[in-house]
Length: 129
Image 1 (cartoon, rainbow, N blue to C red):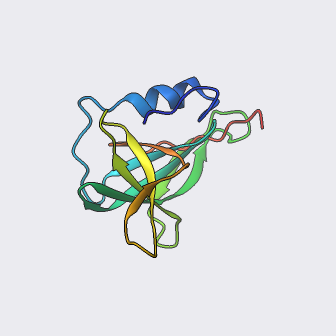
Image 2 (image 1 turned 90 degrees about the vertical axis):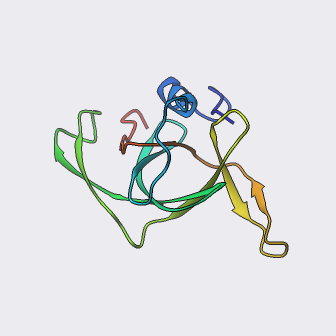
């Protein structure tokens, strides 16, 4: 389900990104992805794609120009083998919904979590917080 402004995200950009699924590329291992939080965004890499479940891992983002404190940062991205992993399932509208596996049943269950867009990496830290 796309992120709902004011409920799932405080960022209009993140809400728009979560709806950008029409024409999005088919996920491939190694492809860039972006996790969408309340107002921040975290760069990630697709590490597994076993339809319908997509798994991404957070990347390391390093400021190479500008400043993370005023929103002008330009980042360089590297894969982080120790990064946090997140799983998603594509919903009926084509949006990525966060899921987790129930250890007792092995079934995937929708959960609260970040939104996702695949095809590009973006890191952003909201300087107002």
